[in-house]
Image (cartoon, rainbow, N blue to C red; front, top):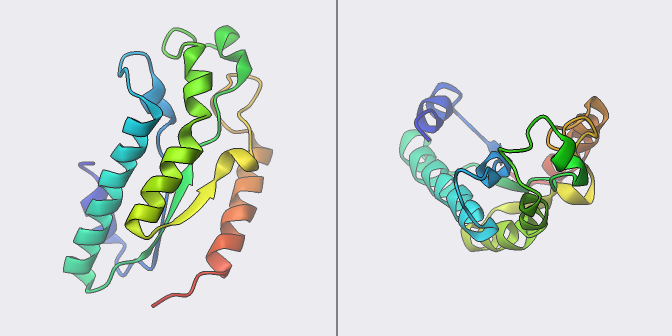
Length: 148
């Protein structure tokens, strides 16, 4: 949150913002639901809209991406302990709540879990191939946006 405004300001004019956050908010230490995490993304969307309108005179298109699910191997992951097995089920609820936030805020919505899965290595991070697939899907979304 502290870096969002300086980042937007240093890159203006910003026509498109792609926002995919939330997986790390599933850590046990935060005790957050999927709905609360999506609402947090909604707060960031609000900051983006308000700040860019003020600083550049228009609001960019915002693509809100629901993160992929946490993999079933989380219990054998080096991150187990920070994330419990419950995080798997909670992550499956992301698309529903992120879509609601996107619709409420006039964002384009993309459910990353339809296209990508975390690596078998740690059940959290994407493989290089997963990054490629996500990039291709986002490129398709961007190509179909009507700017201004």
